[in-house]
Length: 267
Image (tube, rainbow, N blue to C red):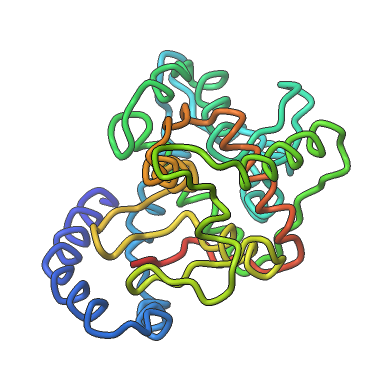
């Protein structure tokens, strides 16, 4: 039943997408446009699929993800995303939401992490992982970001993330800071958050993953970071690698205390 509803809903979004895109192009005040979609975020379609994937027995072990521990207890999703990334004692690693879900998919369901790491965005198991992300983050919408930086490995990742943020690389000699270290910067209709401030870091971290109106796609934070590296014309990071998780720790830690708006809506 859910699959039928989702198929119809996706068709409706596809029919209206050109009009939605035109509206976004006509008016640079995308904040007002985003508010119009507040009660009908198309990311809800991915959330529905993610909930079904969470509860459906899959993989070689024919198991669900209902015992996946995202840091607040086995199977608990309420508020979990707001406290990620975090250090997990069972893996001895700092993990963000995507790498933790990938861990659960492998340990509980037997789905190899390599299948996701070597896959493509929006396809196969990596595409399913994105839908799971949509499901989990929805349960932290409106909650304050509360990332615990007290563990030594979290501090290491925060420091690494800060260094990566300012590191210039690629053919254009860009860093993350080239676009995200000043107030009032904009690319076309997109306002760029100043991640060097707590408020700006929260705006950046706390609005991804998001539904992108311009291409009718749902992008996770891993996808967003990968594309930032691509636009820098530098080596694209391995999915769920330390460098991407470190950047996430830096942004989330700097944005602690601010409310997350998940999933977001982007141009």
